[in-house]
Length: 493
Ligand SMILES: *Cc1c(COP(=O)(O)O)cnc(C)c1O
Image (cartoon, rainbow, N blue to C red; front, side):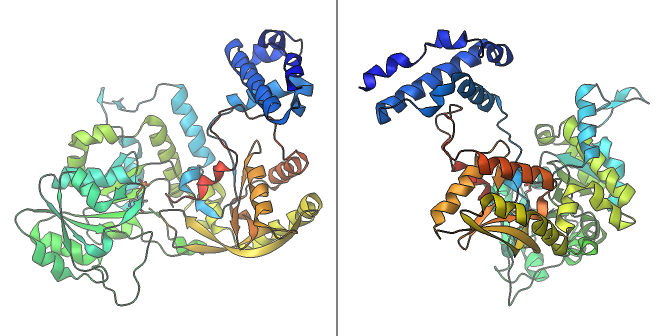
């Protein structure tokens, strides 16, 4: 019986010559249209073999082809609604950039710019010059060096200052940030020998002092941004280590990580050490990320003493780790916002999305939840109990998971009480043109609205999702992209 169904399928050629399909061929190209048509036919044949009926979507081949082509030509970097509650979500690209930064990137992409060209002396300038004055002004540093990310910054500091020699670090600070970034491994890659001092919970200045030999090239501090040691603890302060470095003539570097350039407590956020404080303590170099609390592009920023920075700039690794013009333009524009708006404080969050999201008050988020509740109940009330509930947002994923902020969420509980229904809802939202990402916990699906920028856009997406069939049109984009796999966003760093 199914054999009678196969002849009802069109040929690729006939399909592509249908009047309603011709515009698709013109829009997407002959080759993509042919590939998509072949994939649809294969899917239809498989469906017949498995179910002995034609799949429903074969009623409208042009629509199915349109859908398949749109899906195949969409960017792999899909914009999403980040309602996970993690503000600086590494798997979602961390900081959202300020409009000024976005414009600056577009400008340098379109036209030649003076990236390493010094107009005054007609000689080669340095690419980090784009941000040196701003960073000096904001952090009080003598000089700076900008590389691909903070992991690269740390690697470069070790390689340029301690290659073939020893670097001393506390056992309480030998951190793993996620992925393959572990301080001992980075040191090995940089060619320096790690000398561990102290214990996991307590390290004293004397531990560093006693470990110093003629082979010592560097004293290292690492900010433990993703875990906390509590109880009977002791760590050496930057100022003490800097004094020891001065006495012994050994450079001191600090990997700060998060890179808050302003007093976060002024925005009701947990206190974060700022690079300017560490430099004021006398540390030679401090490194931090551009796309964490700073709210700029992915970058590793090193600020500090001119002689130490000069060694980094001259090192061959700098060439391999350097930033492109787009990153430097985005960073420059972001730093300008700090200079323009950090006094008075209240204007910075208006221009810097990361700070806006982080500093949004729970009461304000709760109002958004209340505004969306009635419509959500109308749309999803048949299958789910929908409520507003307090929750905790996380500032970062792998890198800054410790700090939480009180927030408010829309929560969905299945009437049938089954986790499967929640997972199906989450998968359905993941399959939307702009996926809606929440988080399942305690038998509820949570949409933390802290990072929501456009209520109307979310409402529209929720409306479209509510009426769109859960049974999806054929997915011919890639065979391996199984539905429901999109939750990798919850992985750490
Ligand atoms: C985040 C972090 C890093 C890695 O920075 P990336 O910009 O992600 O490369 C290194 N050290 C510390 C302390 C961090 O917090």
